[in-house]
Image (cartoon, rainbow, N blue to C red):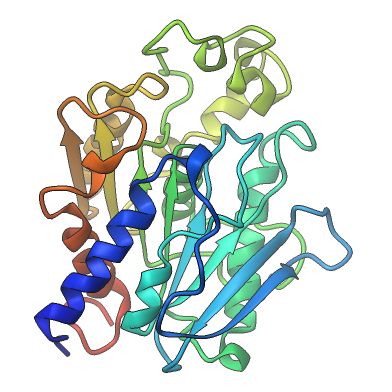
Length: 306
């Protein structure tokens, strides 16, 4: 099914405008055209932590795939309120925005366990909410990009499946990873910013692992998407800037190499001069390619997997 060009262009433009804003300046977007219902603060873990919740946006036309957004914020900040990808509602996608426990409340693997718990809940409740639980894609930026890549690489393992709805799969069908770290033991800080150093009390990695990474190397390897890559890893579209001051582009290049070696579909777009987010990530046809990637792997009736 092909959409009229003007409609696709308008949706892509809206998507690019929403996503190009830095996380710290994004205001919660209004419900866009194409939405029929929004349900907020759904607990995907019964009687769980206050952050184990998600928001669900449903399109006018039911039966389509689901796009899940995972926010960034160094595993210790950010909010699901800034739901991204909402213009995809106009293409028949349902959209979910997921919150997860931060590192100050629970160290890794709590974050990926929560994301997998959210995917399982969404699959368990797909029929009643009118979307296709067999076609779930995920997109995330920074820490959310890391969790997206980790979801893509661990669909065939139950190591991080804890809690409820364990009869449901937490595997995803594709992911879009914006500049997420992929190999923590190999992580080399691209700037002197204390938050991105390998050690120290202000290091996000120290906080994520509950202590110096050198003392938690097994956990750091377990948290690294490259550790889990295999032939069943979901296809990934990765975007990374060469001037990223927080996550070195070498992380995404290594992930690409691992995926190619496993014969997994991967698209890596290295953006010359781009930093950690910004409008460059949606220029030069990138927003259109993201929509095409999602449609290929998620939308029944389009070319690609169904």
